[in-house]
Length: 100
Image (cartoon, rainbow, N blue to C red; front, side, top):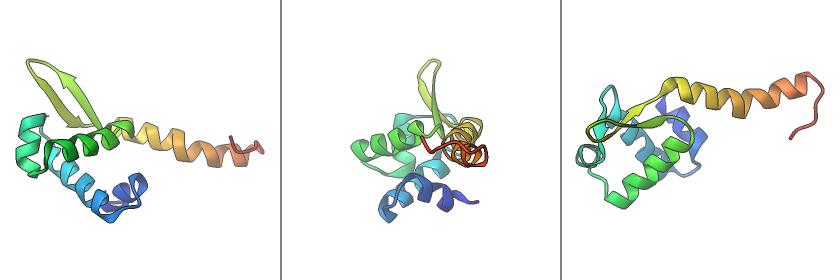
């Protein structure tokens, strides 16, 4: 599974998928402030906030407060999100439970 596949899980819109990939690649291994991320992605403030909201809601990006607020990728949180959202449906079916 690559970043494109992850982006497809999050949005049906190609332009949004591209934006999500851009943000994930920009964050990479760094812990960037919002302004650093905005400069690195060259996105408008509003669009970048939208991208971050999507990524945070799926556990892909986490915010950390130190001297300033910084964003980082959180693969472990995303893995848990995927398990809860997608794997639980299959587990419930295997156990004979109805979809919730």
